[in-house]
Picture 1 (cartoon, rainbow, N blue to C red):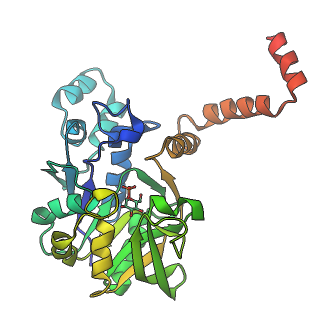
Picture 2: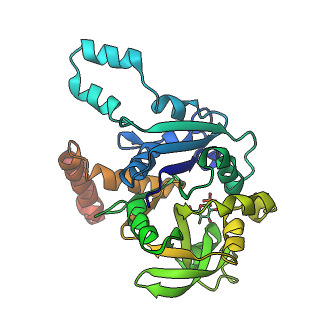
Length: 305
Ligand code: G1P
């Protein structure tokens, strides 16, 4: 029981990052030196995925290029003896992994994007990863943690985490019946409820393992929150027929769809980067030491410089 196919909905317009995303994909924004989509792809591959299905839209060609072989660049790096960089470029996609790109002509929502993957997924269980939810799974990547739950229960599994009550209207929110530690069966799921209407603060984050039944249900799903075809609404229909588990993953999620989350991720990943960590830590240390100085002393320090 291994999930072989992973779907990456990458057709969103990325309006929250304009103007950076005017002509390029938000999924190509780097966290230190790798684009967000590469972290998502690596997570899927480390959980056993072999077929990567990207649901793309306008201005997303850079994603296709990123996972394609770059003959000229590789030849150039090889002739200049830049072996380490050549390896970095060649490692982006390990051998034996297939990429499929499907164009979502209209941005009709996450549910519609997932439905576009049907011809490529067919009749097997699959995963969905939203690249702007960057998850540092610490001991094990989030999708690999979910895969363990899937192997034990053989049902759909959705990653969730607790969020502050005032933030519930940014997420799909679930109510669950406990099954085990950090694991519950979803009894109710609502897309972006108003804080006053939410009876839970357990939020869906961008990792799903789903059965192909979801496609039939998505076909029938009407436009919901924000006028979009919501994956959450199809999952809400699915819980009437099948068990869907909510799994509280171990690790830290960075909401890289928001500027603050994106900056936090860059700082945290910078502090862990093998080549940058020491210099960056020192820089942050000096910077924050400056901030904690009383105003008077700060002036003296500046004057000294
Ligand atoms: C999507 C889903 C939502 C989920 C969120 C996680 O919303 O529709 O249920 O909680 O991702 O990031 P979006 O952030 O695309 O509006």
